[in-house]
Length: 316
Length: 257
Image 1 (cartoon, rainbow over the protein chains, first blue to last red):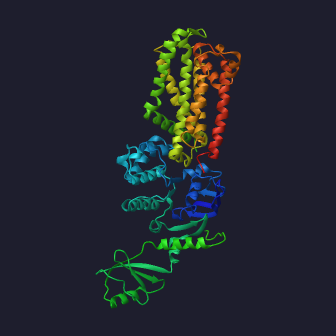
Image 2: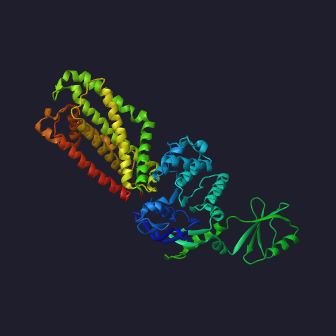
Image 3: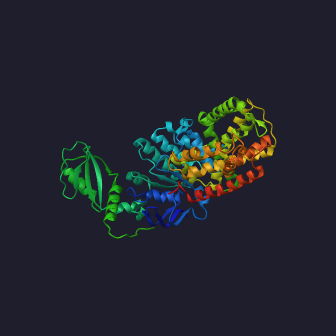
């Protein structure tokens, strides 16, 4: 399958000498749901900014669906939709005007732009607000407005920089569902997020960036397999006052009284249940902890911070 | 980008600009109308009646072309500088930067927006002036060409100012300390024949003098300078400033890190 995005040896040095990107390579396949993760200042937004032409690169190559941004910038941009981290629309303009104006910048005639704007404003629950000035919208609505604006020209690659920052959990889930639907319909999606459960829930492939270098670039499944311990959350029929002492498993209670059990990779879960049974503890439901990726992410970033010399690895 | 798509992008920028300055008409359209009416009443009627003729015309008729041009210059400049800087400030300029619109279309769209406001104000002031004096056009093509080119020139100037500005103070410095003095000293209210030889020479290096006199020639048929030299100078300035503006856009001056 063709690549939606290809980045080769991308370097960005800012005017004050700060090296934000130290020669990164990254490929994102067409149709992928891809996460670019990293701590603050790692180089995520700089990378996406260069892809979207908001940041000038120092050197390297960027191609969007094969279109080189040095030689075929217009073709590359036609395939791109961008949802930035910060609100970047005119707060005094009406919602409908913001979306149709963006379509106009892509050369879409007004009538067609209005149809497309209505489609996405309806899908994102903003149609009733179409005549409101953008400043009157809530934070969640403003985020959805930026998604509608990014989609109005039907891009093949959608880039979202922290799309659910500051959004309540219900709205976040509905945005996830919307993005999954867009991805199923064929739109390649790249997102950065601080909510690692978001990347775990949505993405198939993940790259981790820190200090301007790619530390990992692999599938989510392979990444999670690197975890040697998996934590299970067990709900019991009777609330426990203290965590039981199991022979082969570390246990503790979480804040809500659920039992957390660490299971080493390769260990049978049957043994855990047998031990619980002998202590008259009845499990009524079980799930894996959702922040497995967070544990791995922290480990990788901490390992990288301990590395004394610059290095480059894990490039796909 | 295809030609039809570029035309759509250009008209989108232009319409957005028109929508912006008409939405806030009490800030954009009303003030120059009020100010110019006061000029007509105070300088034209009250003081002008005691001044007598200038350049062979009564004083009111003499200052009308200059006042129209002054309104066109300040409005064309103000529209682009405030609109483009606001987009930078709110970061909505990123809407354009991520899109495939070529830089020259961005510049053309904003300049056209500035011209729309400048020429609109020029029309309003012209209509107001009819309440105070009779206007007869000496050379219509000269009037139209001069006012269009002058409006375009100052719209480009406003664009460069907005590109360079990093704070709101920066967008008022040029209009306050450069544009207004040059306009007042550019022969709007007097003929430079009244000045001593030295100050006549100094006035000749003021570019606005040429624009005001080119326009005055089109309306009244009198001018302190050769109107065709004035037109040539405007074209040269537009070319130079447009090249500077495009270069700044290509390099992302003040809009890309």
